[in-house]
Length: 408
Figure 1 (tube, rainbow, N blue to C red):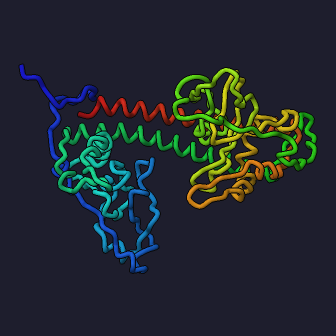
Figure 2: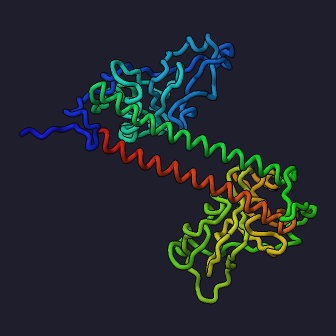
Figure 3: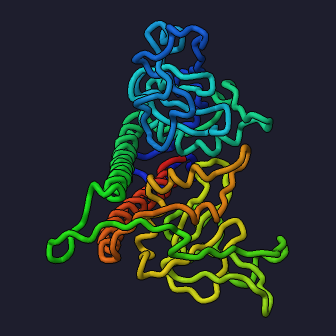
């Protein structure tokens, strides 16, 4: 008996038989985009969408674009209808795929697939599944590229139209759920940003357990209420990779709270004088490629034994009866404080900050009891953000696993 090929591992029960092997160019028309002459201002800033790779982000559908066209500009391009699939074939984001929510045109970095006698939503999911393999077709050169002929000749397997429609409906529902979760995450992050601005401008104030106002916030100079210490000194690349744990630069940059599962390791000799970190310490980056990222902070909110700090950051230690560690997490990342820090950035190609200058900055602090209320309120929002992020990750992993089984 001949063994059947091109059959998915997981399938809706009403379907059987092999999927047909076809070239991508046989599934639909392939349209390479073009850019209307940029010197003609009458072509731009209109109501028509002009899709570039920058418009293809995490969402399945492109509903808005950074650049828009007038009707005259739109007519200079090759219109693709709603539902068409857009695949980035040139540049650093090669392999990204999206679907047009409304008719639009694209630039020359994108090949659009306009399915003929095939389901648009199915073809989108099919190309999403094959995107990494198609990406490997790009020529090895300074700017990676998949030419139109190579793209059109890519082989894949496709079922009949009824099965396409069934699979398309299934994955569209999954994408809608993921999109809803991402929208929820965006709203939570915007809410947190807005409420932090109001809290630290004191537009929002908390009350004590008896409904009474907390005391007025007091101005404090950072250098008057705490001390700084340096990170590791005198280390070469051979000292890293084993030994004692230390906090990496990226741990500080990535989150307001140090993730203690991400320590790297460094060799520390007996009797060597290096500063150890401890619970409640705040860490600041001293250098970055942009002034907006200099002085990024993170707080250690776990008890640790012998842990050190990387050499590109410094630590700040303050009495916890003055500054609550859980509150520090938000204080040093709020917009008003960050604006002050940005003014300290010095440089041209790389920006640096003096810790002595940072220590001259003033902060306005509420009483410890109000700091506690604020920290609890904001950490509850963070918990919701983290929970939503995990839901998105779980859904995306589940979707990927299903695609591996439901496509050939």
